[in-house]
Length: 625
Image (cartoon, rainbow, N blue to C red; front, side):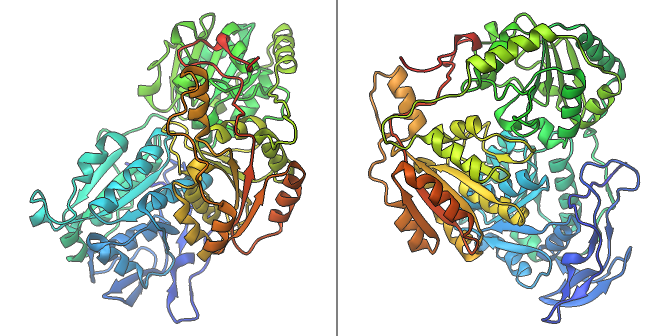
C-alpha cells in the first residue's frame, strides 16, 4: 500500500470555535509536507465536523468515524477537508447546486466565486503553481463543465496538480440529451490525467482520495470528478480511506542505481557538458539539488521557460533560457555540447527547433518521472526514470568538479557577445524597458505572465532566482490565463507580491475576473504591455506573411485605466517614458486592492533573438537589419 500524501504545508494547531459559534475546522488538520512516501505519512485528522442538513451535529475525535448519514455533497466537502483544501474556485449552477449548498455553512474551506468557469479553472491552476498544492475548481454540468476544458488542458500540458469537480445530471437522465447534459468525461479524456464519474454517494470518499493521489503523484496533472446530482443528494456513511492503493499505478521515483552511475561517468568524462533543466525540477521541488549539481560540477546550465527560477539567472553558470526566443549562448551551447543532462525537461519543439540539427554532437542523459517522455522526441543514451529531487540527490553524492575551463570560457564569450538587447526608438516606451523597471522595483515578486510577446520579454529581462517565482501557460499557450491565475497565486501566497505581466490582447479575454480581485481586495499589480496588437501574431505576419496584418489590430480596445476604475480598482495609464518608474513606485504602495497600469509601448517592436519555426538552433535571428 502506498501511504496517502498530504498536500498542505501547515503545522498542526488546536481546533477552535469562531465568533459565530461554529467550529473552525480551518485549523483542524495535522499536515505533512507534500511528496513524502514514508510509512508514517498517513493523514491525521482531529476535530472533524460532520454535517446533517446544514447544522453541525457532532465533532469527531482523532481516529473516530461516524454512523451518521451524510448527503453526497456533504461527503464531498468533508473529503476535501480531509485533503487539506483551503480554497475552491467555482461558479454555481443547477447540477452542482447541492455541492454549493453544502459549502454555504462549511467551515475551513473558502469558496471563491469567479465570473467565468475559465477564470475559475485558471485561478485553481495559479494557486497550484504558486504553492505546489492541488488546486480545486467546481462547476456545474453542460456549459459550466465545457468552459473548464481550456483550463484543464492548460494544466495537463504543464503537469499542474488539480482536481476539477463538475456537477452532472441525474443518472437516469444520462444519455437522454437532458438539459445541460454533457459527457464531460469523454470531452476531457485526452486532456486530463484521469477522470471519475460518481453515480453513488457510497463512492465519494474513495474517489476523492484517489483523485488527489493521482493528481499529486508521479507526473502531476488534472483529474476530473463528474458528480451525478442524485449521488449528491443521496445519503451514505462517511468513511475516508487512510491510504490509496491503485492497481497499475505505481510511479517509479528513485531512479536505477546503474543508470545513475552511467550518468555520473559521462559527466566526469565530458569536455563540453551542459545542464538542460525544465519545469519538472520546480514540480518536484528539486531546485536545491539542481543548484548543488551545477555548482559542484561547474557545468553551465540553461533553464526552460517552464523552469525559470529553478536555477538563479544571476549566477555565473546560468546561460538563461534556451529555444525559439532564448539566449544565443544557450542555443549555441546546445549545438556544440558533447553532453546534455536533461532534468525534468521534455525536449519541446520550441526548445529543440529542427530535430535533425539538435545537439548532434552530444550524448544525452534524461531524468524524468514520466517514462513516456523519455526518448519521445530525441534519442537518449542514458535514460533515468525517477523523481528529479531523488535522482539528483543520489547523483550529487558521486559527482565532483569537472575540468572544462575552455568550455566555460566559450560560454562566457557567447554571453558577453550576444546578450538580450534592444534599441531605444526616440521617446517611445520600449516594452523591454518596462520589464527591466518592473524587475528593478519588484525583484522578489511572483510574476504571472500571459502569452505573447510580453511573455517572452518578461522571460528575457526579468531575472528569476527562485522556483515558483514565474508562472505562465507554457505548453498550451493559453491567452487569458494570467489574471485569474494571479488571483489564485495571491490567495495561495498572501505574504508575497504578485505581479501580473499581461498583454492588451490576453488581458481583455478574462478581464471580468477583475471583479473578484476587487471584491477580495487583493493587492495585485497588473501591468499591461499594450502595443494595441496581438503582438506575436503581428510579428509572424511581418516576418513570414508579407505584412498582411489580418485580425491583429487592437487599436479599438477600451481605455484600460478607466475601465479598471469602473471595476473598482486603481487604474493608471502611462504613455511617457519618464512616467514608467514613478507609476511602478506608486503601485508598490497600493495594498487595498488591485492596481492596473496600462503601459502604451512601441507597437512595432519585435521579440529577438528568434529561431524561425523549422530551423535549427544555430540559425538564430538576432534582430532585423
